[in-house]
Length: 171
Image (cartoon, rainbow, N blue to C red; front, side, top):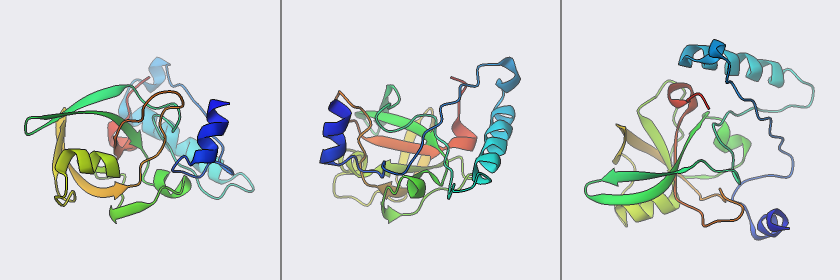
């Protein structure tokens, strides 16, 4: 009932014609970033070859099953947020509008896309593009997207998105 209620109120992303495949890469065979990326790239190629598949995206987490909260520190401000590693196609596949700037590329590990609510909480009326955020290392904001529902039963947190290929962890 909760998911149906959320869907009727607007999730912030397209869910009707999308399919999610959850893959856990727990084997020691995938313990390095290059091994994980090779698997993900091959799986993406194979999925794109399936008749009817129009596009494929990769994410370390998906909307409604958001990642655990992370505290971001920036110039004395502490903001509770969700950090997700996603492919550059994530936003177009889920039809999450980019409202400012652009999406990062797979080859840009130090770039980030943030949700509108993150930008407002962090910088208020200031221009978010070009701002820097410390997440273990410093990343530069290149885009702002609309907020999406990331939790089915709890309060949504602002989001920070990083390029999957450079930031994916073993789960």
